[in-house]
Amino acid sequence: MSKPTPARRRTSRRVLGHESAPAPPLRPADGERVARRRGDAASRQPETRETAEAALRESEERYALAARAANDGLWDWNLATGRVYYSPRWKAMVGLGEDAPAETLDVWLERVHPDDAARLRADLDAHLAGESDHFECEFRIRHRDGSHLWVLARGLAVFDEGRRAVRMAGSQADVTKRKLAEERLLHDAFHDALTGLPNRALFTDRVNRSLWRARRREEYRFAVVLLDLDRVKLINDSLGHLAGDRLLVAIARRITQCLRAADSAARIGGDAFAVLLDDLGDPSDAIRAVSRLQQAIHDPISIGVEEVYTTASIGIAFYGDRYDAAEDMLRDADTAMDAAQAAGGARYQIFDRRMHERAVARLQIESALRRAVEREEFRAYYQPVVSLETGRLAGFEALLRWEHPERGIVEPGEFIPIAEETGLIHRLGRWILQEACGQMARWSREIEGAAPLTLSVNLSGRQIVEADLVAWVIELLEETGLEPGRLSLEITESAVMQDAETAGERLAELRALGIGISIDDFGTGYSSLSYLHRLPLTALKIDRTFVWAMGPGARETQICQGIVALALGLGLTVIAEGIETEEQRQRLRELRCGYGQGYLFAKPLPAADIAALLRSGESW
Ligand code: C2E
Ligand code: MG
Ligand code: MG
Image 1 (tube, rainbow, N blue to C red):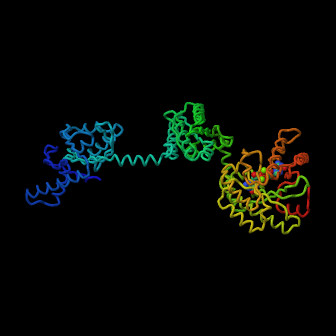
Image 2 (image 1 turned 60 degrees about the vertical axis):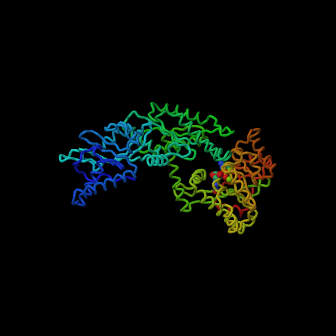
């Protein structure tokens, strides 16, 4: 809602000021009226003085009515005398009574917020100097009660023949509501709703500002710190999301309290925060600040009746000339944070060049891996599983290999973790399952003695939670004709624990089809034994590190013994991995471990070699 601004620049023959204004009921500022009258007069050419005056009065009333409807205050400044007329509404806006003496420009200017005063003055001056068509400025003005309101002032100056401004008049509208709504929107766009901290966009902007400053001031140093809370998911899962949210809010407050005024914190992801440590004297200042942050995060937090503990994996990137953009610095801090996480969390890592090189190498593998999927460069290898008692072949474990066009065979340790992170594991995992089941069914049909053999395939944690996994497996078994009882799926303890509930349900469905479920690398993950017996398991696979560490009286022998006893107690099959020596095999047999696989028997082999091995009827 705005009233019309006074029309063209014209000199006025009327005396300026409110003294000459006609009496109320509706009293607009004279300036508006003059401009209007001129406009009307020009278009209508009144014949007599009476009709002209009547037209004038009508126009004045119309304009005054409009101004009142718009609820705008009006002002009219005579530059010759320095006197200003303020309309009652103008005065009311700033808390002045209708009769309060207010006749100078200072009544206005001294109320303007100090941060806005210079801009307002500049806009006024520009217009009076003839540099702008009209005057328009938004600023804060102080009410008598001390509060500020946002107003939009508009106006137009009148010039004499010498192009000197002699008068200026205009309106003032209260735009506080709109301004606050705008500020709110702006705030929301750049802040995290839960914690009220700046979000990634605003944080990135601040880092860019620091980079800009660093380019100009040689001694200026700063650091970007990324913090990823280590246990939020666990807290979410056990105490609920509301508790998780309260934890995040509490952590956000603690982080903020740790910082100096110049530093800033942001929430840049679910459980990730970022801190900009500004104007550091020395890199060790950053380490001290990070230690304070660690301590603050570490202290127990009460949520309802619960006390929860959390830690953070922290990555630090220091400003160096190599940075052109905030994104690069954030990326490096992120790489360092990943390293802290990989090292077990609850620690910080400072980014260095080698880390960057590793990250780049990883990125290269990632894109090569995507290409490899398109070009079908994957192969299924099979490692025999042998009965330790009879030495006879019991089945195979299918293991993925990547036949790289230049590097040759690449082992899964190098690409499975990346495939899991990037989601490629979904396609890879299905591919090998399909390939191996198909192969096994063909061998059973074509080679004598192959029909009772079992097939074990690894299933990644990401695959277990696939919604259509079970339906897909059913279809696969139908398609290939492999009996479900001959197929086992291997999962690790940590894969199950990632989402124990879903994993439990999914595994039960698979088990119900008749498929076996083995825990792979048993003993290396952190599993809760109480949970294990609730899973529909059929086998445990003893991790090879225990097998290798076995010796007379060694602790690992006892661990193996313990695992075998536990498995047998639960009615599960036990398979030892990584058997390399006759001695190991002997010892495991004594422990009553049923099956084994390892280089002693055979390495993982391509399908053609396995076919030959099957035909030879080899045993060990
Ligand atoms: P895993 O499932 O525990 O597989 C056993 C690993 O031990 C295989 O490594 C195998 O080659 C190796 N191994 C077997 N016997 C011996 C031995 O006597 N000495 C030594 N030094 N090593 C032995 P590989 O093929 O490199 O696979 C490593 C891991 O990659 C696997 O561990 C499994 O976790 C994962 N993986 C392999 N294929 C797949 C797959 O198709 N899907 C998924 N999700 N993971 C896979
Ligand atoms: Mg396995
Ligand atoms: Mg294993």
